[in-house]
Length: 260
Ligand code: TMP
Image (cartoon, rainbow, N blue to C red; front, side, top):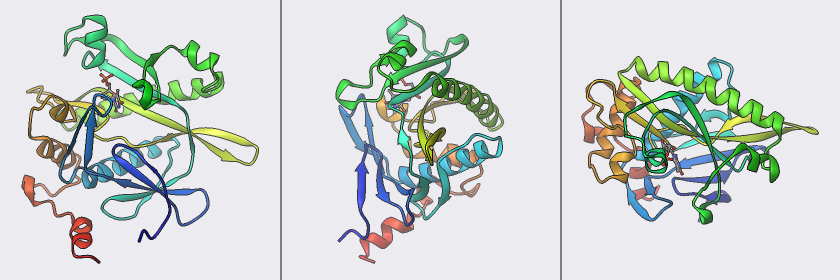
């Protein structure tokens, strides 16, 4: 029997009702999908690593003044977050050409973009998250002009900060996806960063070798996805230096298997 009410199950996370009103528990699964869930698989221990990486990045972003939904990590796979109304727009920030923009515009993967590019997709799995223009967002009232101003300026600040954070550990931040939500306070709402930031939704390349340290390893059947995610966590100082790839102990899963 479930000890609490499940609110939503997504491709990589489950959301449960939180302990206090206005809170949610985010549970990070090992499930991986790509190409709008046409490809499905499991990356062992991914949920544990993404929980830690996302906690770390959100905490750092809070330190530079970006408001986020993150409250605190609860255990290896769960974190407490503030309940928001998700803006149905995925914000993609790109520094280097890779992935869908290469196909769409005939660019070569790895080419630096003349400047940082922000793209928007309509968050709708049935439609495959189509690329949209800001005009669509205004036309269909998915977000107001003021909200889009907040979202785009936060996305640029987040990119600047994260480029530096990853460069310091020998990683190029190629692109990434952000989601924002509305936090209601009385009659007003304000935009805060929501969802997660992890190698699931970022392209991260080793600065020297260009080795991919993100979900492209899964999308493109390159293998070594567990090791890649662990390498990112290790470089961020979230795993002991000497931890071998297979030594990460997922205590939560072990407890569940023992039926406790
Ligand atoms: P793309 O090249 O497939 O458009 O992806 C750009 C970045 O956004 C990449 O780092 C992966 C991330 N992303 C997601 O996290 N979720 C998605 O549904 C999509 C399409 C991209």
